[in-house]
Length: 68
Image (tube, rainbow, N blue to C red):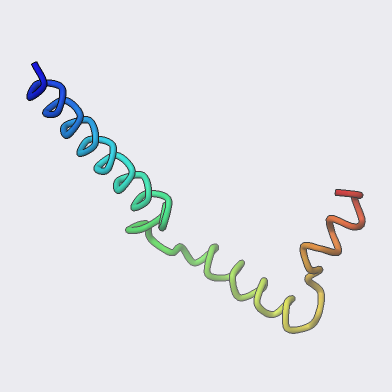
């Protein structure tokens, strides 16, 4: 009986670790393998340009603006 409980515990731990590993892998780069379309490339360039020109507000400033 004790061996069965230990085996079930080991299986449960192994399954838990595997599920966590898969979730981490998916969440670490959710769009991995997807094509970078010309539209997205253009939006990224615009975003970088806006940031360099100072048109992007820090997140803290937005929180302050909305009282978060």
